Amino acid sequence: MIFSIKTSTPEKQRSACAVVGVYESRSLSGVAKHIDELTGGALRTRLRKKDLTGKQSQTAMLYDPPGLNAQRLLLVGCGKKEDLDLAGYRKVCGTAAAALIDSGCRDAAMWLLDLEVKAADVAAKARHLVEAMEDACYRFDEMKSSNNEDPKLQRITVNAAGRDELEASGPALAAGVAVGAGKKLARDLANLPGNVCTPEYLAQQARQLQQSHGFKTRVLEKKDMGRLKMGALLSVARGSRQPPKLIVMEYHGGKRGAPPIALVGKGLTFDAGGISIKPAANMDEMKYDMCGAASVFGAMVAAAELKLPINVVGVVPSSENLPDGDANKPGDIVTTMSGKTVEVLNTDAEGRLILCDALTYTEKYNPAVVIDIATLTGACVIALGSLASGLMANDQSLADELLAAGEASLDRAWQLPLWQEYQPQLDSNFADMANIGGREAGAITAGCFLSRFTESFKWAHLDIAGTAWKGGKEKGATGRVVPILTQYLIGRSRRDPA
Ligand code: BES
Ligand code: MN
Ligand code: ZN
Image (tube, rainbow, N blue to C red; front, side, top):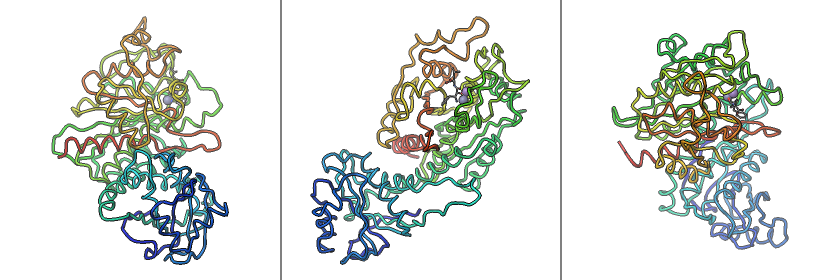
């Protein structure tokens, strides 16, 4: 979809469909009042006759509205004026997008920026309007032999009230478009099945981003990992016929030599658990075990599309985790790139094994901060459900910045403690540490494990096991955590511009 923003008036702005919001309270926003007058009271009549009460998620389509330069007029319920917050506003925009797709319109003029939204300025509204509409239009039918018809909706004009609003919301709209593109890439990669989206496939995608987005891409092969003594990463890959890859993408938007922000994403393209094999139910969803990697791809694309004046390096360790005669066995001891040894008590705790070597490798970039993103633990899903990603960090100001970025982008995270007192759960009788810490505090002990490989830099860990995809009837990748990561990168580029 192509989004543009301008100042116009409903009588002039030509479109297949004009879209305006109506509150449940019958009070009309400024634009709604204006459209009501132009149409000879179409809005008030509908509200009076209760064709539309203004409840959230209600819509009504009017054809050939008089007084407007639009073929249709879509009224969207916004609920009670005093209750409308940013999450509600996103629902309103998503509902509008769904109705527009149903109607088969090719373009639309949105008159939704003047709705009063709690704790949101016009920029936030513009950004979330774009993201919500992109979400509503997302389809994944690449793998169906007869593709369902793509939505016809192509062009969206967002209307601002005046010059000030236009200036305030222009960059925000661009941010929404960039996050939308990043999310789409992340969702597409994640939704692909494990037999298509292999470590090699991810490496190919990274090489393509070198062409399309100017990244400097390098792919480390098995022999390179051997040379670097990445014993933990290699041990996970031993059970698979697909060779592992360590994918490195550099985006240079900042000063030459300025320390980059490193994003490290778990890229398990399928996690069967290995010898500690998972139960059969829903095992297909373990194709989503590369969602951390997908979010790194997505956030880097968003940063590049916004031409952010910072340096970012993405590091993606990628492998499968399968049972095999040569696979990791419970009790095996592996030596990580850092030199520390790990007793593999459960081969299904493989994410931390591939991440610890990737984190050690990241040291060579002398990063300003490192954020790893991983579908790491089922325990995190039990702790936080699907609303918040789990956040752990060895630096509180980094944690605070990420929490704030999550609030602003409506892609929230919640911090869990990384207290020293949890560390002994990882004690091993035979190696420097075990790769599991028992049933208690499973998300935290996974974080504790990673913390032992991140002592030389500022580091945060996002456990996205509960947020990266939805199961059940709505099964599909969500594109989280591209928004919070992009928001954080935008914040960083404001703080230390090139
Ligand atoms: N990829 C899984 C985590 C996961 C499980 C995410 C279910 C989403 C839903 C990870 O590799 C894993 O298997 N973790 C184990 C760790 C355990 C063996 C300590 C888990 O969470 O059960
Ligand atoms: Mn696992
Ligand atoms: Zn896993």
